[in-house]
Length: 252
Length: 221
Image (cartoon, rainbow over the protein chains, first blue to last red):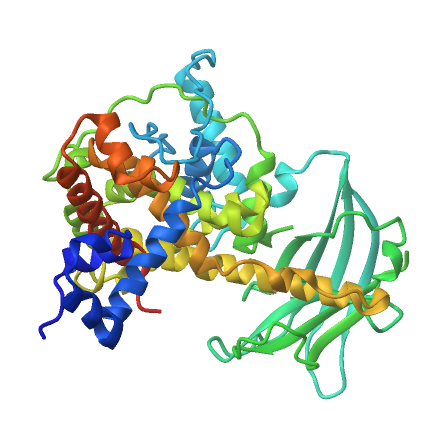
């Protein structure tokens, strides 16, 4: 017999089997195509029957949008107003209507500060005079020279900088960047036990980057004192390539 | 000294620069383009404008789908800060990569959710790698590998949103049937509708959900 129409299959998936006659029921049981459709629809029924999932925390819609707009240099970091229909299980951001109105000057300054922080002001590359923005109490705790490994070219420096609660590692490597599209460089903190390491992130093509050091490490970084810059192929493998360009140890 | 910041670091830095713009009204921009208000645009019109590079389409897309993206990220990663980072990466990445988006190949939210799934997977990989490296010493098992597939979480979040958007009586019928497990005769009596009508609404609602789910989550990867 012919396949069942979509509505009959939907009825089947919803347990409305009394809407189907014996022949139709028999067909669904034996036809792989109709069976697959019923299964697909039934999965939706099952997901629906689980009911709403856990609530999310309030979503900082406007703050995220400001970051996005600033990063992309679009608009004037204006905030899109929240939509009219909140979705299931999702609480919108608490209204910011109560914030005191700000003058245009304040708004402009605020935007400039944000833009500068995101590297917008100096242009597309995101280069920014970080020192101008830094709080005066930023302190260089330790610095190390990064020397090339056998067979590699290049030289670099790493500075551990403490600023209030946060610790950053600033890395700068001179010498030829790997050919774009083939390899990129990644910054690692390796433990002196030789067994553990953290990936801090990708080193930008320009050769300089600043990285937040993993929280919870003590003043001597719990032994994660070896700064390593590796050459990573675009192979989808997140592990260290075992091919390092430069390396050095922070004296902490 | 001049430093070039990696985008990921840049976002972290941005988070620290707190009170910036607090909802102060901006002077209205002169609107050079054809369409004055994208809010009234259909998803398809918005997708075309997005692909054309109209910035206001990004803003409207954000308004329409940020909650979806954020909720999927939050439920997958169970961390508000990671969900925020992923959400920002999704819209930034989508805008920068809009040249790769073809409205004819699929819906704009479907494309956004495809990017979202990739960014979440990146986060999960980074986490399990960190966990593995750190746990080489303690040799604990990596429990994160048991997390629910992102695709299932995405399906559920999309369904929730779509069910909440169903017009009545269809929405009410489906919620009573799904969430409260009521039988069709019970629902018919409660809503004072003929039994056949109730069942038919449920069937059509289910088919509608299937269509929406397909549009929103089946972007070819």
